[in-house]
Length: 189
Image 1 (cartoon, rainbow, N blue to C red):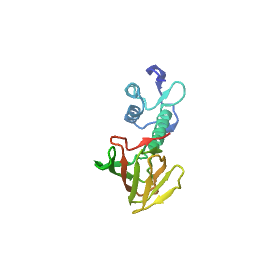
Image 2: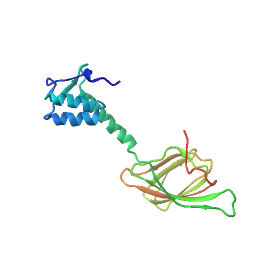
Image 3: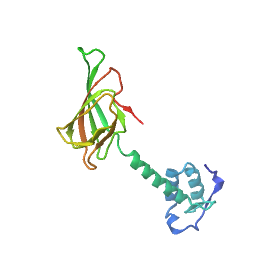
Image 4: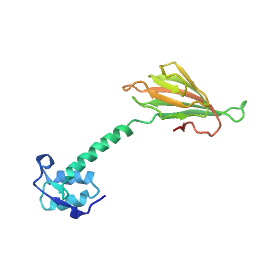
């Protein structure tokens, strides 16, 4: 719920942790963190006040701090990078009507992973760099290093696909045999 300007008041009687040294600090903090920040900041700084408080008792600074904490938490979860997928080649099979070959590389950032998915294709995996952890539903979880391989059948659900390291990237090559135009990855819930 957004409150109007009348719901805010300027105050110099706040605890020390909510006070600013300059009016510019108030304006910059509010402009960055609040939808009404520009209006409130200009109203308060015009009158020479150095701190701001909502009339219902919860300080603007508490709201700003809470917003920053929530943004940091969200950045941590969103910051987990999606794998980088690069298409190397697509080719229709001449001798196998209705099938195409697709060759891609997948790069996991440190700590990166895939969502649970399927390919609706035969997928042959070859690890190029780093270590990856793979598992299909009903199969054993395996950790693979450079030169090792993994297979996913057209009906397999890939329940674990992640970088085994939280400090080093991992990269692998995938060769898929699939129907032309079919998506490379289908998320599964």
